[in-house]
Image (cartoon, rainbow, N blue to C red; front, top):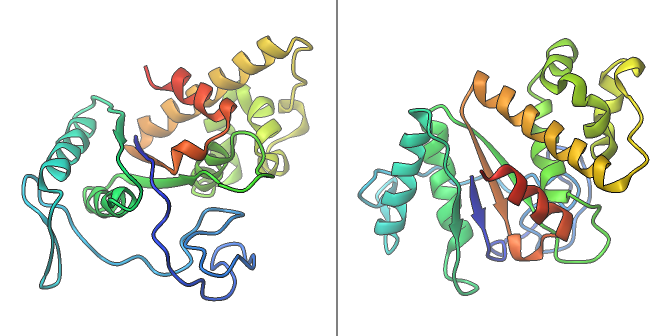
Length: 226
């Protein structure tokens, strides 16, 4: 898991979102609704321990970081999961580095899922996690999704309402009345979902702009990290 902590690189939004159709703010790099990029990503590759190359252009200045991230991905493919934080001053290239790593991960057959924290008020709780869970769920048909959700289907549907339309009502069990117990059930259900997803294929979850994350999202990250 790579947790980026920079503002998205500034680009110009090209009309509606290619995934969900939402009209976004002028200059937005990613969709505020589903997190999809608003322009086609640039093809790049990582060659640990060397720099990334795009055609004849070399991505320089982050060779050490890319080597560490590439090694972490290789360890993940070998069965040892990793969590990495990209930290630094605004504009230093953290999101750009994460994009390069994401392209390398895809070339190594990892499934890459992005969750982007939203700077403005109004985003629902767990917003970056909602995006990655929703994107992951899109890769399964309904019967397979039900198996992936397991007994936690009702808990996950509380924060990702889209899931409620794809599972039988009998699986949408009500939450316990106690808020702390309900939160633990949710966290445990999400952990189980990612364990089953990772058992099928290695996953790279990228949480961008983590410094804008809401407190529940950070608590969930703390729960999942071990």
